[in-house]
Amino acid sequence: MIVEDRFMPHNVLSVVGLGKSYGDTAAVQDVSFDVARNEIVGLLGPNGAGKTTTINMILGILQPSSGSISIEGIDLARHRSQALERTNFAAVYAPLPGNLTVYQNLRIFGLIYRVKKLSERIEALLAEFDLQKFRNVKCGVLSSGEQTRVCLAKAMLNRPQLLLLDEPTASLDPATARDVRAKIRALTAQGAGGVLWTSHNMYEVEEVCDRVLFLSHGKILLEGNPRSLPREYGSSTLEDLFVTVAREPLTLETH
Image 1: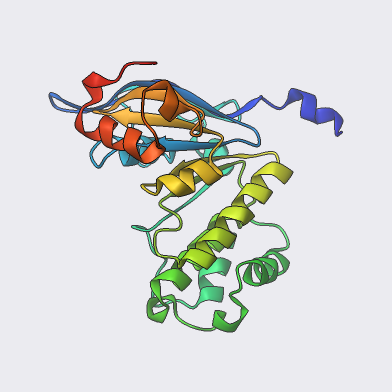
Image 2: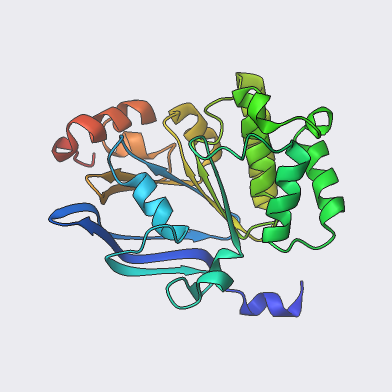
């Protein structure tokens, strides 16, 4: 074990009292949670629950109305660049520039993140995500599944300590989605980072996530192990629990 590891904070992400309001409307209210090293945390909830707003605040795109965000112990508000260089993300709603080839996209983003030995890193990721044959193809003409794989390769360029994935397998066929889930789980287990993962696929969440947080109306309503949490609230499956959170959050009681 490297000696300096003992000085690394236990959590790669710490969110405390996070809030975001637009006038009198609160999109996120007093949200607090951590993501530990080697942990994949699912951020779940119906549309409009505050998931994307929370992710955008962690990415520094939105400024919180209240609360704090620390990435590897670095306060995002005070040391934005230092915190964000340890972060990366992929989302179905954020495709890469379509007029650039796969290689050009990876190279430009690699330069932005100041990736060392960039050419070697790109070649490794092209192989890892089965993208070699598309290296000189413009991203705009790729299928949605192929574009998703490029976005995931881009998200791994800087070996992020905090990886944010918003519906990362939504456009993938079942076999490719399974491979991607296995790859991310393996990378998380082997490295020193953690993952915050949003998905509406509850089967995927059960397979991938170590812990889940259910958001409802901008607040964390439930938290726990995705495989045992449904039983605690009288639901037979995680999907049933999700539906209850979406439709009737006030009816939830532990059993």
